[in-house]
Image 1: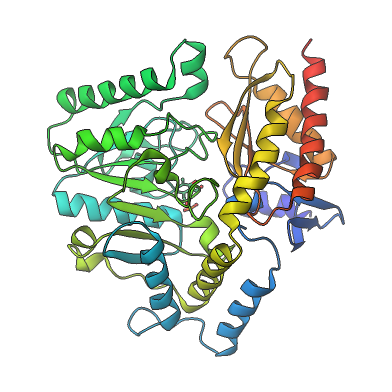
Image 2 (image 1 turned 180 degrees about the vertical axis):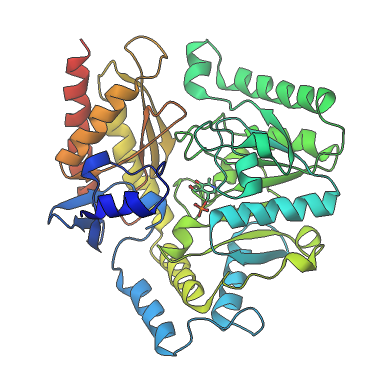
Length: 429
Ligand code: PLP
């Protein structure tokens, strides 16, 4: 039996697997490249799912993990002191932008958001949360409840009372003749209206991704979260920034996605890239909020010595090699190249740094075209390039490569992507 058949026989049937019956089993990786069991090598423009943030088999990361494993201690639990964990917490608190910050470690982004929601709900004595449509925050009970994406949400069984704000989608806003300022005003009006009408006045927090990841790398106008926070602060409502995809310099111009919004969140959640593949996530936030609920501060595996060793090496690497600057530089080659394409099926090229989305539409409309997206996606694979897919309608190609991507690799991938889009565009006429 093939590995895919064995997967289907033993794992939940609905689990999406890229490339359907021809799914790839990745067996090795080096730098920005991975090799499949079929012997083919691909340039990885999605970095796992923005998880392999530094790249594959990077000596500094592998060595740090091997050193920790070499001590014989993979785990001691939070019953004991863990040097790697304390050092990583100090570094994350330092770069968080939150004064006097505290850090709580988890194993994943879902747990990070679950914990942040729990911190906020406890401090505010309320289970009312504001979330944004088209968002994705994870696979746990509470995080699914604040996920506003129909393929991934389960709000009918919610442990929270959730009220939804519109996602200030740029493409549709522009097509409707709205500029960034108008979008921002409309979004703030929307927030005020939701607070005044459907909430009971004691909302705990707003949770938001500075750029929506699974939702298709959608971002509202700059300053949106800052404008929201001014309104939230009037009632003491907390702001949780989900930086699981946007953190650590990925957006180029800023170290955190929230910085484009002129705001400092009360809580920031992180995961994915900080472990470069090792399971590591967490919350960094204001001491008053994080210290208020001591019973939450325990996780058997969160921040275990091996993951924390990886996290320390990753964060050092990001800072020592100015990967934020690289994301900005190399990302602008990709953005520039994609924006110069003349293809009617491309509705919008958007993003920042090395977080770039290409939205596919039926020519001249804002109507999503998932079929064209799939053809571009498959053509990329044929050309040796792995990209991501996403968006509410499955009509966005997502690019989120390791932040170490070189200019040459960017140009190679861009050429495959350009050919794939051009060939698909030709079919649309
Ligand atoms: N938050 C965001 C923005 C994400 O993109 C994801 C995962 O894709 C999560 C949270 C959940 O993280 P995890 O899959 O590690 O639980």
